[in-house]
Length: 189
Image (tube, rainbow, N blue to C red):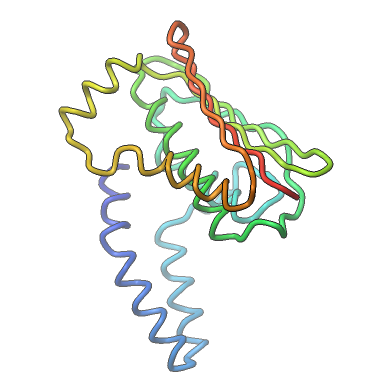
């Protein structure tokens, strides 16, 4: 799974350049075919989860299908309304980073564990909450130092910055005794 993700990241900028050129030259039918080929190469045939939002669903279904280890049991609750107050790109940034971090954390355990994704809607805000169990913080820090991952922490910063852009709220908590990690965002409707 990691190899596939690295291959995708390696190629995606070139794909964007090609699609941008097709759009610039107004070759819309060629662009549509290119996009379909790209989508088919990186998507699954069956939709497993439905939140009611196409952006969230595409991230949710791809990541759960392709990135979760066999030990992770994803549980999804709730639905989202049509979201017009947050751009699709920003919604993607927030949710993909939340889910990616949760999956990475949950995958560190070599035992069965639940990862919960909850969508809630209020009168003025909607919330996305992702909860997972992971190894203790001190052990994660040791692993990060060994890997010398230059990208560590950028996802949290992107979630926070993008949420603040919409005057939303981002929370993260960790229970060091149980190993439960929770990220939650509140965004306006």
